[in-house]
Image (cartoon, rainbow, N blue to C red; front, top):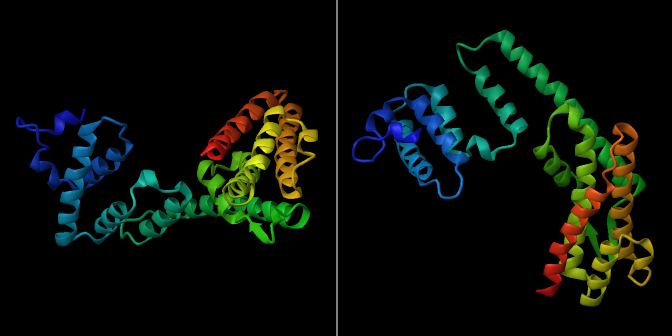
Length: 261
């Protein structure tokens, strides 16, 4: 497809630079490239060059704003809901904006945002009131950024119907971050080997000789994974525990590689 935009010398046609909206689409699509797709790298360089040149002479402030924003951060590198919030503001400034469409966009954004706020409230209540993941370790403290982990899961699935997924994924993100810190800064080699073995066996008795902070980490993972499996079986009739355990084991195989290093 992109070869159709090239001239007989194998270069992108200079006439393309006159169509700024088309050039902007070419620029955005270039960020979907896979390894080895050199033509998309050429398309990106071509589009970037001419978009920057157009910014210097543009007489359309709305289009210039879109171009400037895209050059700063391509669409496919953004979080959809944050990009939606920015675009609503940008669209509102247009003289030809449709008031009804704008109102629906704002209503949709606010309704979905209210659900996300429920998620955040739920996560903070769960972690900081019932089972805070702030661990006393060797005289220091490991404090996990719950908001960052919530944002991580929000970036993966912002749609309202995936609320349960976001809440469970936030738990896993928090504990995985905690375990990474334990591996990097606190656990001894012997402790980490025992910890990895306990995960491999999926046996709560295997952590008996580990320090308390490692027991908390393991039991947190163990309980949350089992809770997710229970909820899924109860609500959907699907037994996913073997798959969850396999995923957890993969995480700790990565942990094991860090131990060896």
